[in-house]
Length: 382
Ligand code: MG
Image (tube, protein in one colour):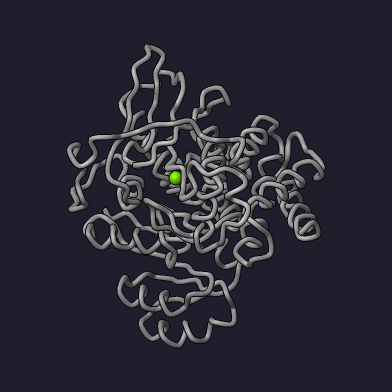
């Protein structure tokens, strides 16, 4: 039987690459649901090609255009945030690929888990904001979470066949982003154009800025904590500029397993959708002789304070990571709109972490409240 796939955020970088994976394995997967926020032209094009049952265009102003193009093909068209949150419940869906950006992925992911769907998680912010709640629900409803983030996919792959052998620690690799080696004085005047040029990966704007500030690695540290049930001391960040080793696990006998390959998000996407099977493909192969010098260095947390702030938020627990995430989303948006400088992003996040009320054991309502309060405060501080 084919696996029915829903792609939340099909017009983004992960969504479009997922569709490339799926079309190569049409015998295994069927596209059931596609969703987009605004990009209705690409959504229409994707729907005509992949013939899902249903599409959701979140921006209601674009509903008429999408509906007039697709309803004649027998494709159901819905619009609005509520539709996005509910569409994951459909019976014909086996796997929900959450490729939404930021906090917006939280409620749809919770709904999908509550309906027992397998989650291919590309939206790390969901686990950062509410990892405690999400992992509990995942257990309760028997809805496994397969990581799509390349580092977490690497760790997940290293754990296959280990029969619950305990993890001593993990090494999360980081490219270091476009500003590796630079100091604060040089970063002060960095432009968004410079920050949007990632050396190894081609990704959406938000995650590219997060990579330049090392917040992406900070969010990934927290994501790893929840996915693999680790504490702070068990998660090391290793800067590895070539992005060939995607991460590694050290076991209690000192043995280290790593997963390697050329940087290509299609591999972790395919692994999450096809798990536990490794599907044959024509992706570019790695050659050791093309990379005779794989190098490693420590992350510079003093210059790239976001990484330090993420560790601190993780250690404090409660709603701290939710504050960190919301403040960061506002900070990145402000930087992309030329409202603040590169280093001010960390100042803003630090300020919000200090000022927003701490909640030790948050409910879903507390998370929603924290997110809203932090956005209000961050916008005021701007
Ligand atoms: Mg990653």
